[in-house]
Length: 186
Image (cartoon, rainbow, N blue to C red; front, side, top):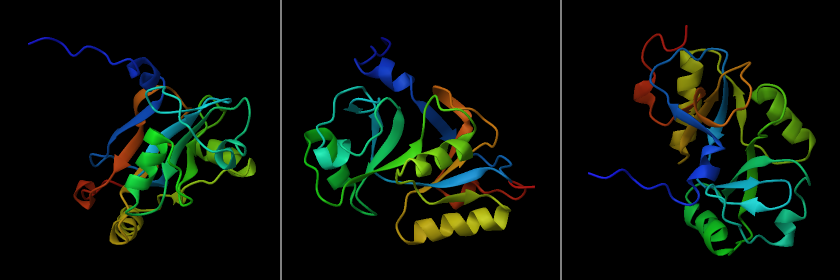
């Protein structure tokens, strides 16, 4: 069996921050944000790119509002159940009016995730619903509410952790309530 040959965009994708799946870790006090079902889009301060580094053809109504010289990690998102609209925007440049960019991090920006997302809000960028995990019950109720309305799940951000590239346990994906084992939150 031969090893997989890296795709052209693998090097760019590796520069992004990626999370692991939640596996029952204690996350009390962590930040949560809604995991949106869209397509990743990275603004490098001058151009909008896919997670593999390919340019995204976006209209001026989108790129004209983005901060020059600042890298922003976005999700192109059209709403619950509208993944196909987001995919067509990113892949083919077909920007339906419902497709917009939602910031979920500011790479290379100072501070932990809460500081970075607050900076994004001060810049006028749209951000996903978010908060702080208070207890197991709170986390389970938040996840249930997202899943009940057709959402994908939650992202969990470790407090105090700086942004860094690659896969990290400072960022966890929570998509299934069965990973919320007793004691996952002290």
